[in-house]
Length: 67
Image (cartoon, rainbow, N blue to C red; front, side):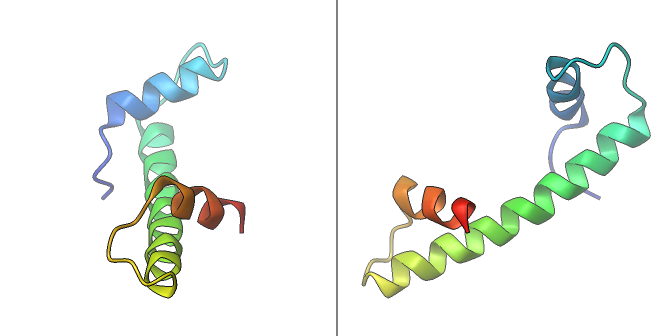
């Protein structure tokens, strides 16, 4: 189960243009967002370590997201 609040994911889907959102759809998107977020965070941590830093910066996250 995803750690993201379902209400926040529901708002994202509605912001994208949906009029109604099932709970299962919001839960599924939350799972997918969390999986992708973990991939990006892991890559960003590797980039910061490669740069000789312990702190992950916004530039690390952006670069990781582009890969």
